Image (cartoon, rainbow, N blue to C red; front, top):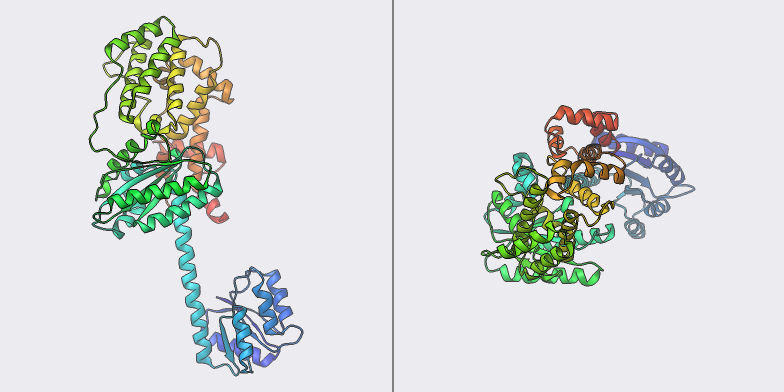
Length: 514
């Protein structure tokens, strides 16, 4: 603790300093002054020069009360103790109004001074503990946003760090997982307000929330007592309605069934995703609850499959898209929508294999790069799903000739954003997602982005790794894996090439900067 002393009486000032040192030798006296003006001049030059000020009331040029009043109007975080030979109540009242911590009467009693300093020390300790807690909390939030529930559960240390504290607090109680998404990018001011309200909502329902950036999703783990299921759904719906009423954006939520164990979080998350995908069918500003039993069906019958195949093989894109649009319109739940689209993609792949003389394997590939978890969940509206499938059909029918497929590159960049940790290949994207020549897609990507696919992916991964290195929570090898590198030495090599230093050196620089 750093302290400055102000008293116009030299011997009284030195005696007070001696008394302070005898009470606590670890207190550092950084300055002693004769009047308030000298104190202000010192603090202007050294704003971090003191934690505590002990000042006499009666001093020339600027007395203790005037000094205290002036300091109360600054941003300086300073605890002040007033010392006076006068016992008038008015002095004490004015001192308290200016935020003074204590008021001592001359001659200063050692026990009273010690008690005053101990109170300040306790307050400082509590403040530092709270500050460290807040900083740690913010660091965890920043780190977690680059992960996912599945990744956290696969790593024992991360589960212990991020999830177990929540479950220990509500041990033995059942929980439900809820996903909240917005239909557009939330601006920072809206996000700050939403997160404050989410914190309040989570506290009211005994739980916590996490933000995962890849899918711009808020994931809530909420513990409720018996018989609270209906009221929870009502409260969640009220919460969303209030948020939607106040802003020009739409929120939807999907909630899972009830569980009690940490490992069941993965299943709970899948259920919440399945539930919220229903917004594609029934619209936004709704709370969707996971249906325990469902019987999805592929609306692409054998008869319609024959018609669709003939339309594509005869390059009749309009007929093919009209049939597909009709099928999608018939879907009444997101499960049927998913199964139907997979059926369409499986057919497209078989046609692609036949036209390009590619050997078709036993496993169907429609699901390879179109999944309930990623692609379907990534769409905000059903018209986007229609457009996505329509673009693929148009490609296969070759109706767009030599046009540049800007939308494909946009989709690939979005795909990298959400799957950069996986083993991504432009060849697989070309063959199984867009049904086009991989060499052509490679040239298209370079023309649109200005660099090769592999270089863009490498730089994207390393930038994500740099963000994770700003905190000390994750190990270097964990960050390498999260960035998509199984070989740590390769990761370090690429990182040094891009940033001019190793990941450890980069982390040290960021830590010192903060």
